[in-house]
Length: 90
Image (tube, rainbow, N blue to C red; front, side):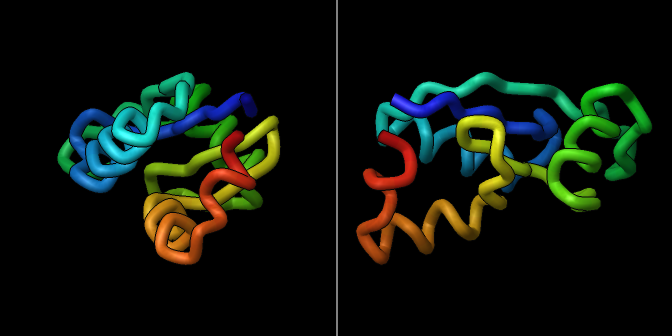
């Protein structure tokens, strides 16, 4: 199985959707909290790492598979609809 990392915030509804989706599909992942206050992401080490590794993305969640930037929750749902989910995450 591939190594999956998710950068997100517990205050973000899209992050909750991504976490629930991964759990429902039995895809283990490592959660990396991006601190937010009133919708603003704080410049913590996790935020800086996410931004650097994703090519400048600042929205959460940002998902990485085997160290490579994958995308966000929209891509998860698109890949499920297209049937590509297993080839990417397994």
